[in-house]
Structures are given as C-alpha cells and as structure tokens.
Length: 233
Ligand SMILES: [Zn+2]
Image (cartoon, rainbow, N blue to C red; front, side, top):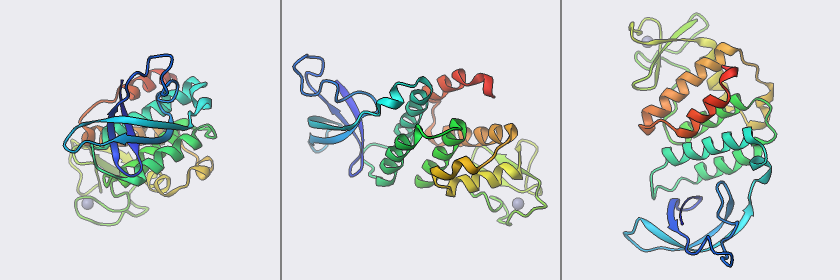
C-alpha cells in the first residue's frame, strides 16, 4: 500500500508499506486515514517512493471518525494540506497546524467558521494570505469609509473602490475585517466571533477561489462537504 505522510521534519513523504492487508501485518490498523504516529522509513536518495519500516500509532482520532460531519471536515483539511504542500518541502508549522486542528475539531461549534480559520492560517503559513488591511493595487490602508471592497480572484488581492474594475467581485469591509481577525485568533477563541450568512458566504468565496488559484485543482473533499452542508448556504 502506498501512503502519503505529512511529517514535522521532512514535509510530505510518500512511502510504501508492505503486507498491510495481511492479518499478521505489524501495520494492521496503524496506517488508516488521518492517523497520527511516529514514522520510521528507509530513505533512498533521488527516489520518489520511500519504504515504511515502523509506524507507532499516537492517536487515531477515533472520536472524529465516529462523527460523519467531523470526519468530512478532517478529510477536507488533510486534502487541502496535501494540495498546498509540495513533496520534500519541510514546513513544520503546517504539520503543527494540522495536528492542532484535529485535536481542536471536536470542541468546535461552528464548523464552517472553523474551516475558514484553518484555511486562513494555512494560507498564511504558506505565504499566500491576502492583505486584509490595505489595497493590493494602490497600497492605501482601508478605513471605515471603505464599505465596499473588491476581490480580484486571479491574484487573490483585495482592492479599494477607486482601484476596482467592473470584473471584480464586491466584498463587504466587514467580511474583510473578519478574515483579518480570524487569521490572528486562537481556535479556542473562535466561539466569541459572530458571523452573518453574508460574511460566511463572502469568506467562503474569497478563500476557496484563493485556494484553487494556488493549488490549480478542485478538491474532491470540498465538493463533498458542499453537498453535505448545502442546506446551510
Ligand atoms: Zn486602491
């Protein structure tokens, strides 16, 4: 079986685990989707595929897997990390964000808001977060007078009214301010943040178009999530 691991020290690692399906395999039940553990693998230079030697399970997040909604979100987070990270690039912050996210997931009340917080923090770590405080074209800081901002989804920039063109999508300053706040907010404090349906829709639009711009793909788990949550939008 070929597995993709997201590691703290070596980024994304693809490795083959032999004999997983055998009842006597030492990997049995260890290498399931979303499991966290300690991985030892044999590395061959210049090979894309490594070989798993040991995997000691630390947490299988069984409470997430027992809840269909939580599991769907966890799959989305993991697919998003997979899409954003390139092979061999080590980014310990991405690993720490993902494990912290799985540990926080079951305590969350508003999963849609939590998903936006995860996306914002992942984009920030990866260096792709837009500037929510100033216009991406003229550089002027947004003020309370900028009620309507505009989003340019080909570059992920937010621009002021004077710099906007008719092709751009309108975005409320409230949603822009919310994204800036959420980006800096600890997951535990998310429950203090109130959002309107409009905020949720605008944030969802901005972040998903930014993500598809950088990953060049449409995530299957996000499509599934939209289907599951379609009555909420
Ligand atoms: Zn401007």
